[in-house]
Length: 142
Image 1 (tube, rainbow, N blue to C red):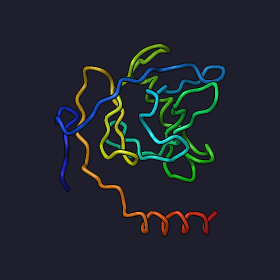
Image 2 (cartoon, one colour):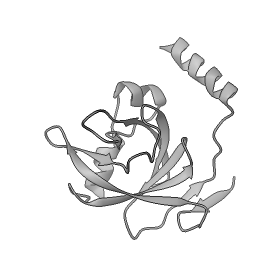
Image 3 (tube, rainbow, N blue to C red):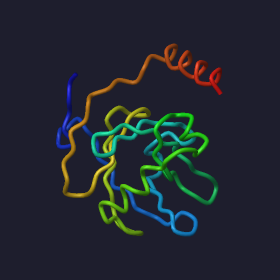
Image 4 (cartoon, helix red, strand yellow):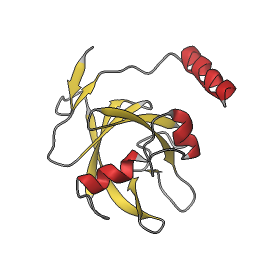
């Protein structure tokens, strides 16, 4: 499988901010219009692919508040949230920065600390018909 470095000029990198989410939880506040709000995207953290729902609303800009093992878990916020533990492990505090790499727009992103390099598996967004089939299968399993 092809791999691509975060340093490759083809990879757009966005600066995002760690923010407080609820009592002691943290989330990633994203630049406006950078990720597809309301959609579940792939989020690669330390070489592991998770799924995250890009949220937003009237008062809130786009943000990610969790990284889960499946699209369903991301939509329902069930299971283990790997985002919070990663932020703790790398010592990212509220108002600190993280980098979001655009691996495949509207589909796959990478998350890393500023100053760190990451290498990602190059992925392509599935054709819409395949995405619909996968979504229907997920709904049928629910």
